[in-house]
Amino acid sequence: MKNIAKTLPVLYIVIPCYNEARVLPVTEPAFLMKLLDLIAAGSISDDSRILFVDDGSKDATWDLIGQFHEQDRHVAGIQQSRNRGHQNAVLAGLMEAKDLCDITISIDCDGQDDINAMDEMIRQYKDGCDVVYGVRAKRDTDTFFKRWSAESFYKLLNRMGGEVVYNHADYRLISSRVLQELARFHEVNIFLRGLIPLVGFKSTSVYYDRSERVAGESHYPFRKMLALAMDGITSLSIRPIRIITALGFFISLASVLAIIWVIIGHFMGNTTNGWSSTVCAIFFMGGVQLLSIGVIGEYVGKIYLETKQRPRYIISDRIGMAEEDGKR
Ligand code: UDP
Ligand code: MG
Image (cartoon, rainbow, N blue to C red; front, side, top):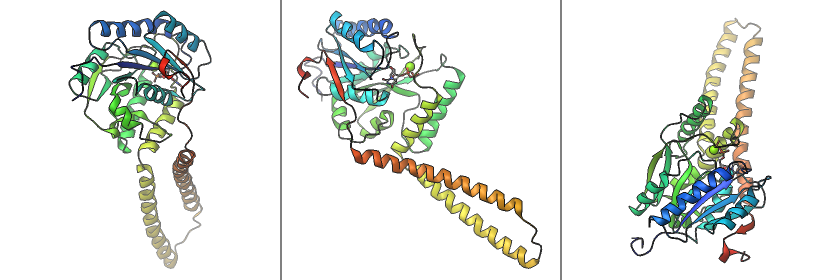
């Protein structure tokens, strides 16, 4: 078993931030208070940190993180060399934290996820769980459209073979030993929600209510949600290619039957000028083929990107990660 009894676990709260200068002044004090409360309650070690990951923000986000560190040494920060997206930002934070702590909790910086669920997450960790998923109990505060699109997203993902926890975003506790294993997954296209279940280990869920963003706007408009869904599916499963193969098979079968029917019709002498049917067939086949090539192209593109083995994140600056400074 883990050495919890002897020493308190070191917790790193990993928080990705992209252009959040309006949000951080509101949410940072709440995160810090939570961390200090947990320390005071003897639940976690005093070496615990809040680790902000600035995902190449163009506003004052990084300066703010610097100021927070000046105010309290429990706040640390890393800056990505450019904007790489939410998933890579979280991964960067987790990978930076994995050798410095016993547990990480990743959470968005916009105050939407209930920080009080952390107590229960830590309790579950102490009870022997290595992964604790934060799951939204209800989505009252989301618009109908957001709720509908998000729910379709989970359903589609699961149907396409990606194993994801329903209504769980990226609010979760992960122990450092799971992160050590996660570090052995070398893919560049990352979809953490699907990857963590693949790593395994004992896991459980903690339920919480999601509230509204304290300020600013969502970085996930419909277009990006769709991209994330596509990415999630194509990173986790090859089921779409199988569906295309099956579709191709059935269409070919149908065509054979149609050809027989046409030939019989020809010899029966009742062939009309079949313009409509010809045009319909051409359009339909054209559409199906283009779609299929597109899906396969999506995978080929992924293979292309993976073979390059580009770094998954590049850190340009660190604050409050003292022992790490300048080493890499
Ligand atoms: N985020 C990021 N990089 C990006 C986009 C978003 O690090 O390119 C962060 C953002 O600052 C926030 C979290 O990811 O902490 C979730 O983003 P957002 O709240 O906009 O998404 P939503 O909650 O609407 O799905
Ligand atoms: Mg949000």
